[in-house]
Picture (spheres, rainbow over the protein chains, first blue to last red):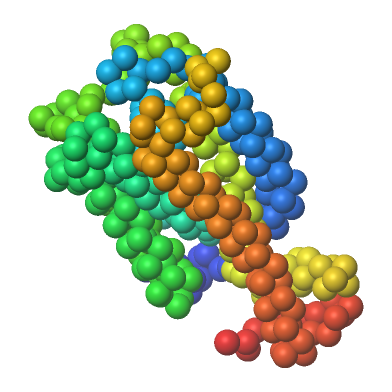
Length: 264
Length: 70
């Protein structure tokens, strides 16, 4: 499939709009990512401080669970982020497959480790929250099981894209996992409605008023936005390394490298 | 303010172990990821600079495209 495209005489590299995009986009994106990432990181840090202050010092004790519920300020943002990042990865994978833009695949690979991290955090905090409230770290209910599957999908994606030497084949193999695995995300999200789960239903949804104190909600939402900002910052930093690696044969990367070499 | 004292804060109504294990691990993972992601780019630059010298693109030279690498 890739070879056909590369050797197609009607579509020689360097002339078609596709390869123009492939060449130009990473070159322009690399410095942009470097300039934007610190701003996202700083925003994340500020929001985290404010969110944690509200979460620990303003939000009241939960009338049912006591203080342990304060895990929610990382548990819910991490769980949302783990699902959302996977969907964004699937989106970039689809864009990459349809448009044949290399930067799209690189974006989805830059997001994967952060998504896996948040997925693990959601499972870990869930287990530690479950023990004092449910009496068990783990049950094989639909929500927990599908979230664990998401972690394995992340691991599968990362392992596959790193194991395949040829970047174009790695991109495509990863894109297929990302797209097929995306089916799991709505399953996680709606599992608490579709099945009888030990995991509680959604406290916050788009269709009805949230069933929690407004200060709790404020802390949780601030932490969620912080998680977004953090993810964007880290993905932008990671994408820079991936771009250098992938584009190392190009002149512009040569110039970037030499400039860094002189600065050291 | 929700807490009578700092020790009440750290105890989290008896759930301190669970709450702080959650926050502790999350903090550790975030710090680790930041360190790794920043080091990764630096390592990539170092490695690619070495690779450029190995294929004959000297520091300061503009470097013509080399197709026969790999």
